[in-house]
Amino acid sequence: MALDASSPIRLTELVSCGGCAAKFSAGMLQSLVGTLAPDMDADLLVGLAPSDDAAVYQLDDERAVVFTVDFFPPIVDDPSTFGAIAATNAMSDVYAMGGKPLLALSVAVFPETLPLPALSAIIEGAQAKAREAGALLAGGHTLRGDEPLYGLAVVGTVASDAIWTKAGVRQGDALYLTKPLGTGLLVHAHKNHGLAGSELEPALEQMQTLNDRAAELVRPFGPHAVTDVTGFGLIGHAYEMAARSSVGIELEAGALPSLPRALDLAREGVRTGGDERNREYVGAALAVEGADDAELGLAFDPQTAGGLLVAIDPSRAVELEQAASAGRLFLARVGVANGPAGTVTLRSRGG
Picture 1 (spheres, rainbow, N blue to C red):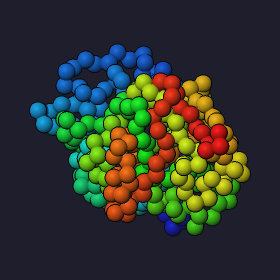
Picture 2: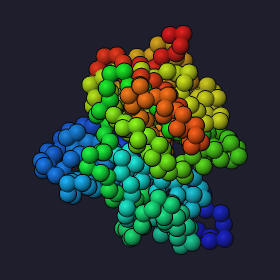
Picture 3: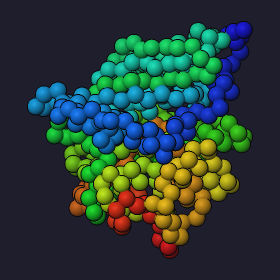
Picture 4: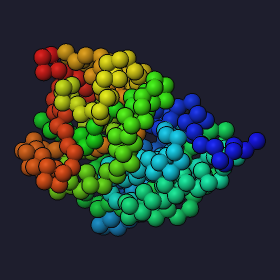
C-alpha cells in the first residue's frame, strides 16, 4: 500500500542506518579488495593496487579521467536534502583526487510505496548540486527495494601531473582538515536522542557544501596527499594515509574541529554503529596519549560528505592558512606526519 502523498515523508524511518555510517566496515572491505586480482594496465594510474578514493585512467599526455561511485540510505527525512547530501558526498571523491566533476549518473533503490513527488525531489536535489559543481546529471539506474538508497556514479577529469592520492604524505608534513567533525553524532542524536532540528542545521548545511572551494584552496600549494573524511572517521582515513605513505600521523586532540554540540554529545556517550567498526579497523595501529574518550569518539565518528584531509609541506603552512582566511574558508591544522610508519597517535597537549 502506497504512503499517503499528503503525509510528511520520514525517509529515515525506512532504514536501519543512514549516510556513510552504513558503509561496509573498512576491515571487511580491505579483506574483500585483497582477494581481487588487480587489472594491470599502464593507463590505469590509480586502481586496486592500491585502491584510493577513486579510480584514475590516463586519457592523453595531459588529462586523466577520475571515476567513482557512492550511494547510501537516507540520513535525513527531507527528500530534496537527502538527494543534495548524497550528491555532495559522491562528488567529493573526485575533488579528493584533485579532479573536477564532469558527468554523473544516479544509482537508486526506491520502495514502490514511496510517493512519486518524493522520488522526484531526491533526484532534483542531486541534480541541483551537480549543476552547482559544474557537472551534468545525465541519467542512471533504479531498482525496487525495501529500503531507499541513492547516490551517484561520477566521472571527472584531472591533470595527469596533478593527481592527488592518499600515498604521498612525507615526514614532517602539516595536516589540515577543511570541515569540522561530528555529522554522524548529530544525525544519530537527532534520530535517537531527541536532538532538536535547529541543532542539526549546521550539520545539514555542511553536508551540502561541496569540497570544490577547499580543493581550489589547496591546489596552488601542491599537497603531498589528500583524502576526504567520510565513513571511516578522521582516524580511519588518517590511518589509510599513514599506511599507504609509510609514515606515522599524530593528531592533536584539542585541535580537532567540531560542529556545535557534537563534542558535548560525545561526552554524553552518544556513538553511532560505525564508531565501533572504525575502532576495530584501526586496532593496534592507534595510540592514545592523554586524549579523553569524547575526543576519541569525535575522531572516530563516521562523517557524511566530510572535508578534505590534506598533507602539505610545513614551509607552506602559514601561507595556506593566510589564503584560507582571505577566502573565508574553513581550515583547521589537526596534526603532523610523525611517528612509526602506518600508525596514528591521538595526543592531547598534556599527553
